[in-house]
Amino acid sequence: MSESRRPSLPPLEWDALLRLGYLPEVLPPGFTTEAFADFVQGRGKRMYVGQTGPDWRTRSAAYNATKRGNQRRTFGFPHPESFHDISLFIANNWSQITQRINTSTYTRSGPVPDYTGARAISITPHQKLAIMLYDDMSPYRYVVKTDVSRFYPSVYTHSIPWSMHGRDAAKADNRPNSPTVTFNKLDALMRQSQDGQSVGLPVGPDTSRIIAEIVAAAVDETFHQRYAAKPVCLIRHVDDVWIGASSMTEAEEYLYAYRECLREFELDINELKTSIDESAIAFEPTWPLSLKRLIRNEFRNLNREDKTRILSEVFRLAHEQRDDGIVKYAIRRFDRERLWRWHWPVLESFLIRSLTSFPHTIDFVARVVAWSVRSGRTIQKEKWEQVILASLERNTNLGNDSEVCWLLWLMKEIRIVAPPSIIYTLIARCGVFPIVMFLHLNPLPVRRRRLVRDELVNRIGPTPFRGAQWLLAHEALVAGWIPAADLDRAPMSPFMKELSSARISFYDREVLPLFMKEDEDDETKEFAIEDMAGRYEDDEDDDMLPRRHPLEDEDF
Image 1: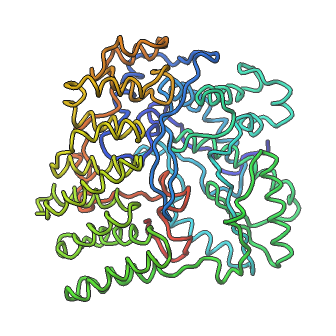
Image 2 (image 1 turned 30 degrees about the vertical axis):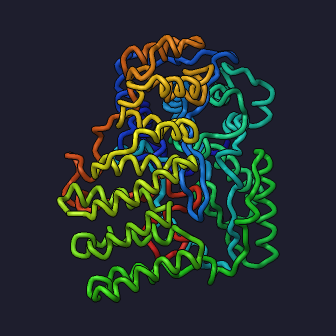
Image 3 (image 1 turned 45 degrees about the horizontal axis):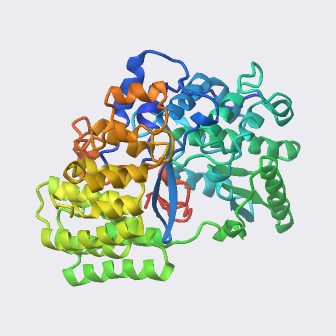
């Protein structure tokens, strides 16, 4: 490993990973790990708790969410026992990790401990990245653009010790408790957390971001060593890569070399997202800047008819580009310009249509409507109830976790009652997050109906506290939805027994949205949508940024 080229990062606190870096951040308010973090710290034991062997392997609870372009992606919420140990290992070995990451002169996504925001770590936000790209690539005629194909799901866990100790050393000593190849332990913990599988990282926890950056930094260093005598302008942000080149031949050479470096770590480029462009056009499109100016400079001064035309143009552009991120971006811009208060009648109709036609916007729509109601604004409740219930039925039937969760949260905020019978469809078709959320908000169906309890027990399956249904089983036990005897199908680890005995829940219906929290300043409460710059959601499919436009500084 070469000498670090940047200052070391500040310490990473284990408590921050437990409290802020565990849950996927795309969940609605209510899901929380605060009680879990308090429980772990209250134990006062900085020791590993996971059991070893095939019988004690765990799995993550899955959460499927909308993705820009009418696609979906799956997030993972690791088992508490596994996350306890993985996060402890990372916190204990943070100094070594930062040394590894700092060997890369190419990365712009090195994780930095940051306890001022909603996550345990932060990375370079996209608005700063865009400026870096614009400046650093300016001397080059061509820009290679690529990314790593299915980066997180493709990370080979054995490549973790390869990245830290070298491939030869890791292969020569693969003992999990090796005193020299210490990151074999992290490899083993990751495999134990995903039912023994050696491929993939769960998308969502900050620990995955850190591990992915370890591997990516090793790829960077491998590429750098190939061109030690000929410096190359390469910028990497998580799994997105740009390389400056003076000629097409040089660009093709760099692309080939980077692909070969990835393959040394069992990764590959995404051919569909790979191109070589002239730098003058490498950062298109221009629509975000045009839309931003239109909303900021013109919208507030137009009459109702012309405002409606602008909003219709947003929908038309989204249909034309097949990109629902355009509508999400527009909602964000209206929030940034504080336009809800003075233009609510026309914008409320815009939000209703966004919810019905563009499901990727549902989290932003829910935040804005909840903020408006909590701010004392009158909404068209009958119309909202009509579209919400119709959307809830449709998305429950489709098993769309994120849409169902955000709709349930919005219903709680504006006091719309969910039909009790929907619980059966939830159990049959949705993931554990919507089921847990519904039952916490509507506990009567499961307490009054034996059939609901039977369906839940069947859904949980034979390994209630270790398999993919662990969150549902744990919450059912803690909340008393199901008798403990009905879940006594497989041994429960000592740690999970402690957790359930302490009645630690991962859901609290009283958790406030960010704009309502007492410790937030008045300016934050002026916005319905919290600042997401540089957060986890921003990068995997460019959800929060127009396609790398250098002059645009907002997310969507």
